[in-house]
Amino acid sequence: GSPAFNTSNALTNAAGNMDIDAAFLFGDVSYSTGYQSVWDDYLEMISPWAAAVPFLVNPGNHEYDYTRDDWPSSRDGGDANPKYIADVYGGADSGGECGVPTKRLLPMGISDTRGQTVSPPGTWITSIGPIALVSMNTEVDFRSGSVQWRWLNKALGGINRTETPWVLFAGHRPGLVDSDWGKSCLGVDPAGDDRSWTCGPKKVKSNEGNEGEDVRDASDVGVALEFQAHVWPLLVKHDVTAVFSGHNHVYQRHCAFDPGRGGSGIDSHLDSIRNLGPGEDPDDEARAQYGKAGGCVARPRKIEEQKKIEQNDSADDSSDTTTWWVYDAPTAPVSLVVGSAGAGFTKNSRFSLSKGTETCEFCEVVMYEFGYLRVTAVNSTHLKCEFIETQKSAGRGKVLDRFYITRNEEPRSEPRADMGKHPDAGKLKGTWEMARGWAYVAGACVTVAFVAFFMLDVFVPKDTVMPYASID
Image (cartoon, rainbow, N blue to C red):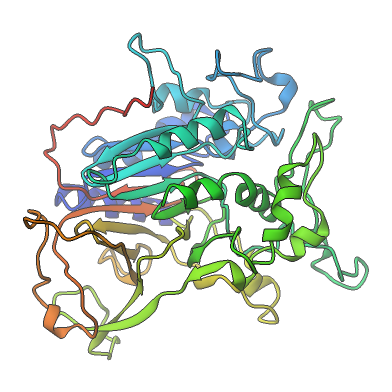
């Protein structure tokens, strides 16, 4: 539909102006679900910008998921054969593609010297300037000790933080999201609550091509609880800057979050979730503790900047200042869901479903607006992020959300080439060093034309080849 085309056109303009340097689409790439003609239309639509900048993807449920019985007999993968791993949800969302068209049309992954894939499907690591990008596949097993979990632990642990101080992590399904889908059923009256159908695990029937298989809960809360028990500790351990996801067609910015923090509510349930057996799911007690404010390690502070005349603001913007939010050197990753690059909105947020009677304890911003997130590595201590709307602003790219993530750094004997004072630093009600430096953009989930998407604007020569890093 038009939102997808408008977002793609906005990126074409940005690529043509050399304002962006790479793109990362984290899942639900084309929504072709088995129809090759949709892939043809999609690739034609994105080609003006996707042919101009490096284009990075990982798979979502609409590329990868299918009934377990229809995967090849080697579907359980393993260290010796990691490229064949079936999804853990057993649905039919990919229409039988099982990740094959995505892999062939948009190849990603770590390869050995013979060109053989040695990382689990959808997992890879690369660097662009001072940014390290790490991709996971939320559709295959990511529990502690799995092939993917061990690969992620090794990949994250091997990043050179002097060369790449910023580590950005992405997977399709969120590890944290404001959603009613899969919430606790405690206190819910099935007869009297018209939202009761949203609570509890959401799993495909075992007699629909998944007989005898360990099919996992595919609900938003169910997936997030397992993500927080198994993957999130790796993100905290390895000092990941921010974690991005799509799947829910919404823009959400959260606090810097650590589910293992004492008093988070869910911290006392993480071990029981890690010990779940085949076919077992987090219970209602754990679901009731999901997303409590106690997991927030840091909240952003508000600052205001004197508005520049050249900014793309509409005529009815009467304020002479621009609001920024700053996460000051958080000790846990800032969480974002950027899933509104074009597909119709999925209003699973408790803000909408509960009609304001509940609040999201970890949310800073929830928006149902089409657009993408542009992320700029200003220097080694400041990461600048802007959510850019693409549907209502007639292509002008109005910025709807602005925030910084900072990090501490030991003083250097010599200044870095990319360091410097922001030209308008004197107008800021707050102090930090800023400069035009490395940048990139993120966005997600669209219709048949354009889906889960995460752009980078990084200043490297256009003919620079960026090989995937080896962690062996």
